[in-house]
Length: 279
Image 1 (cartoon, rainbow, N blue to C red):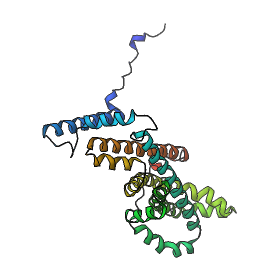
Image 2: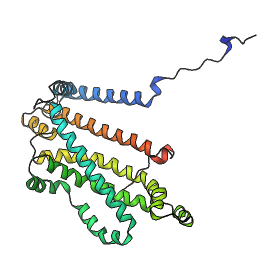
Image 3: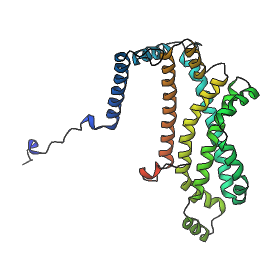
Image 4: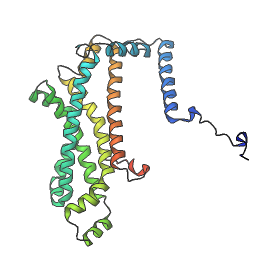
């Protein structure tokens, strides 16, 4: 005789409030509500801090325009996004390539170390006007500024990662007559990947900052130019809306890197693949 179905223990339904994503959305809603209420309750001037409702209206107007409209978010956002992707790709690629070469040549690392430290300590924001004078107001100057900001995090973390490889693994491969390329491919590069992705995550944040700084110094289009135009018109709500668009670009780039990291480090535990590096 089949057992009574009603006697079987019922599974508890998962509480949606226990989801981290739901809690994050509720926290965001609470912060935005507090922002709106505080600005209106204390009568803060709109040119200082606008209520969030004004920011939402400005964001809607900017996104509702035609993609090629010179006063909309799509056109300027596309220019800034192109600068970010080009600068991030070139700067990170060069930093990783030099990090690989330097890690294989200890004497070269000792030779270039002081110069890397000296160049890394130079404030890139101070160099940005000079680069704009050299290369003009086009996209090239912004790409170079982003390259300077993204190059050093990837270079430093890559070198640290290649140094952190377990020496016993290298000795084991050498005992099996492995070549230098095989040692690099089987031991050094996989061990350095968590460090490299940590540098890439830092470089992604710096790339957004570099694009805006370059556009502040001198540009013909971009979200930084749009912020300057809105500040000249005392449109603080529009300026905040552009900052939200920049934040979304940064979040999307970081999410893409996390996906690549999960695919590249699928063989590692989740807590190990999320390693952070201080530089």
